Length: 207
Image (cartoon, rainbow, N blue to C red; front, top):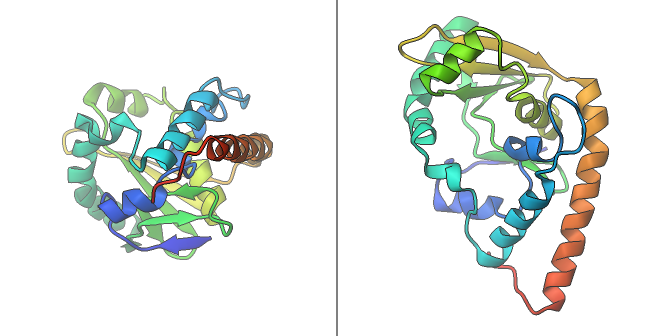
C-alpha cells in the first residue's frame, strides 16, 4: 500500500485520483449480492477515461446533498466512534496499491490494522440499516478498502444525530476477494487497451 497524504476534497486530491479505479465504485465491477460481473463496468470504464483525457472528475454525486451532509457530520461521527471503541483515528488522503493502479479513500485509519468508513444517509436509508435490510449495500467498498490497504478489518458507521447509530465490523471476505480479483484484472486490461486506442487517435492525458 502507498499512502497519499493530502486533504480529501482539495483540488490536488481530485487531480491525483483521476482515472484510477476506486473502492467506492467496485460495485460497478462486481455485484455485491451475486458476486457476478456487474453490467455497470462499461460505463465506469468510459467515466475513468473521460477523467484522464478531460482532466476533471466525472462523478456527478460528488456535490450531492447527502455527500455534503456526510462531510459536515463526519467529525462528529468520528468522535462518537473513538469513544465507542476507545481508540484514536488517523486522517489519510487516499491509498493506492503498490503499483498505483487501484485506490481507496477510507475516512480514517484505525491503529495498524483497521479502517473506518462513515455514512450519514437520509433518514429512510438509515432506518433500513437499523432493520438489517441493507447488509450488502457497502460490501464492495469496505472489502475493496481492505483489499487495497491490506488491513484486517473495516468498521462501518451509519451515523445520524437523530437516530441510533449502526456500527458493524467487517473482516476480509475471502469469497468476495476470489470473485473480485479476476474481474478487476480484466477491467484493468480493458482500461489499458482503451487508453492505447485513444492515444493512437491523438488524445492526450491531462494531469
